[in-house]
View 1 (cartoon, rainbow, N blue to C red):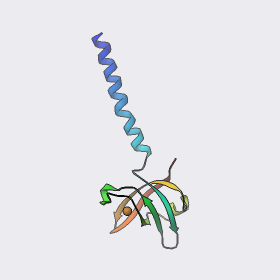
View 2 (view 1 turned 45 degrees about the vertical axis):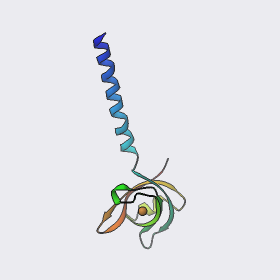
View 3 (view 1 turned 30 degrees about the vertical axis):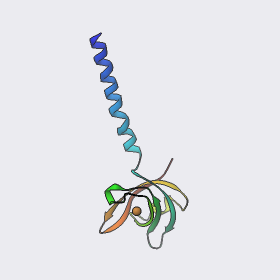
View 4 (view 1 turned 60 degrees about the horizontal axis):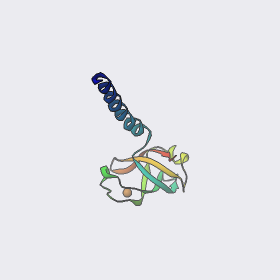
Length: 101
Ligand SMILES: [Cu+2]
């Protein structure tokens, strides 16, 4: 009986440890909505939720530089997206973006 409980708790511990890892690998950290794409300037306007690492404790609408020109073709105004952003050469830049499922 003791062995069974040990095995059971091991299974629970393993499955519990694996689920968040998978979720984390799939989802980009910030959710938002595209409000404007400016391909000529290489910029994207996003209405987004809090981004703690960039000291944005509340959601807002703002302009980001696009990390690559391609990402401006992957999404359009009105799309719900998930993305990651960072300061690159002093400019707030979207480093990854994908349509929210
Ligand atoms: Cu912001």
